[in-house]
Length: 129
Picture 1 (cartoon, helix red, strand yellow):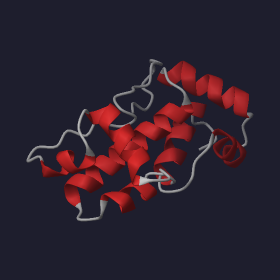
Picture 2 (cartoon, one colour; picture 1 turned 90 degrees about the vertical axis):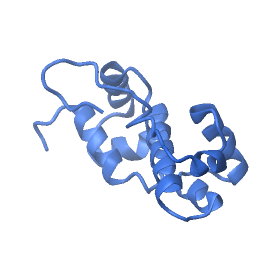
Picture 3 (cartoon, helix red, strand yellow; picture 1 turned 90 degrees about the horizontal axis):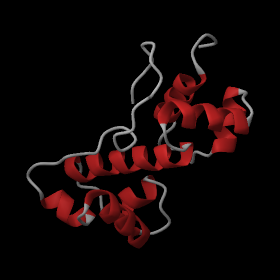
Picture 4 (cartoon, one colour; picture 1 turned 180 degrees about the horizontal axis):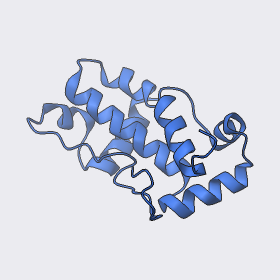
């Protein structure tokens, strides 16, 4: 993992710890990078902030859980890092243009994809999100 580019290490860490509370500071500490350096490299490669990417991935996972499990919306909201079902519903509606309940009722589901469609910018065969 030492030869892996910074952003790839960050993406791997996020995927392996998505169910935990993630922050720039925690990830930087775990991967032994400066917060500022890591944030700059991530934004340069991904075209979005680390926070936006994490929120997008959490929302993607929540959409999958809505479609594939019978967990309550409140439980999924808490697992996605939201303090309340209301806050989750508002964020979900902004992302998917429907409520979590409406999304769950659909016969066809379209999760946005990792990080809500964000892809790595750098060329060179790097990991795409």
